[in-house]
Image 1 (tube, rainbow, N blue to C red):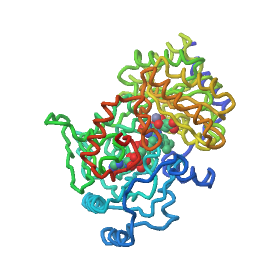
Image 2: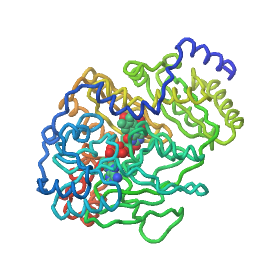
Image 3: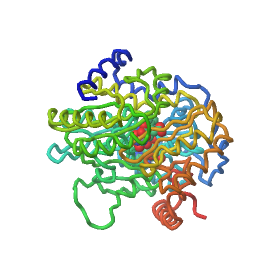
Length: 521
Ligand code: FAD
Ligand code: 2HG
Ligand code: ZN
């Protein structure tokens, strides 16, 4: 089938499938966490300590004197009301719950430093919190840790419109930063479904990957500098704006991906690319996963430098977004879908390349159906089918979430094996993710949490991943839920060195305890 025939089919498909819902995605993203909470069960998850049988470490408990100290330090910015704390004690997935009695809202680095110094002296444990969109239980307390929120640290400090270097406070919301940059002809080098709520400090602390990693690389490359308050209250200023700096150890890397266990990131310097002026999205249907892989290979061959994203989802994911979010499938039913995005500076050039790619993909049979969008609203609608899967799954029941790096040729095999293994014990087993990064998001849903289902999943999923030379966390981190599984991806020696680093920077262990790094033997 040539491309003009494809276009015709596409038009017909649009007509048959009905018009995609046009919506203000920005607005929905901002409301996403609130809606999800309102729409799903009002029942809180059990306390983490009870469900997982964790023992509290010997930290001090917050006293009335501590509260009044914080009220003097942060007038009007200390939250102690149980109702107001509820959102902050429960994770986005509603699977873990702590019972912190206090949340602090500093405005600047100095205040964060004062909080940490005081807590360290008093042996009070802390959980740093950004947008609370983390998916591994790292952003909420396990017991009564003091919550330190970056919500009021939301100022842009500087932007250099020649180099594209943005320096900002850690609490800036990702989507707000992107808006700020768009107005100046630039864009953020990362994008994710939680952009309306997550903070840039949270993004760095989890080393978030997201939808643009294929094009712009990981935060380990685009972040130029970090400022962080350490547990003893001292401030580490590595807020560099240089692209090249080979003087000694690169300390900012310690804070990227450390999930709040070493200190609190207070400011960030990040290199931002120019906003591409031409964007196209193709949404394609494939008959099986081997054809999905052929599409990816073809994308790299024929789209090369303009390829900016290559994502995939299976038909179960499509069913989820149709059922729970009422999104409309823009194509006839296919076992797999691939979303290909091109971004560049010359619309004609990119369109020619995309057309040639689509023609080859159709002629070779690796794609059976497809649709293309060049206008902004349609592009957003197609992206919503991929970006909103997490949200749709949250409406399906209790979600067991795995975020795995797997050699690409085996990326989908685990999903198939699990379907056989679990049978009717699971409501749904879905696979989707960042095809271009070799990152599978494997999600299993069930009516409610069940120890038996968990036992069927773990350690099976981790063992399988390790045997296939994968990683048990590609981009979400370890947090509370995956901490003790680190050994599937890291050697004993590597974990021991991490423990030593943690002990050196945080000898009392007050920073986000019970998370990320297993306790020393
Ligand atoms: P939080 O959830 O508040 O915190 C995450 C961790 O970082 C916690 O351990 C916390 O203690 C620590 N932390 C937060 N701020 C600081 C700070 N300033 N200093 C030190 N530690 C801190 N993740 C991806 O990688 N890719 C995706 O594509 C993606 N898509 C998502 C889509 C949806 C709908 C949702 C709900 C989540 C998604 N996530 C994704 C996961 C999540 O959004 C990211 O991990 C995000 O980076 C977390 O940012 P946050 O501000 O919400 O951090
Ligand atoms: C995504 O890529 C996020 O959509 C979330 O990383 C993945 O919910 C998930 O499993
Ligand atoms: Zn992801």
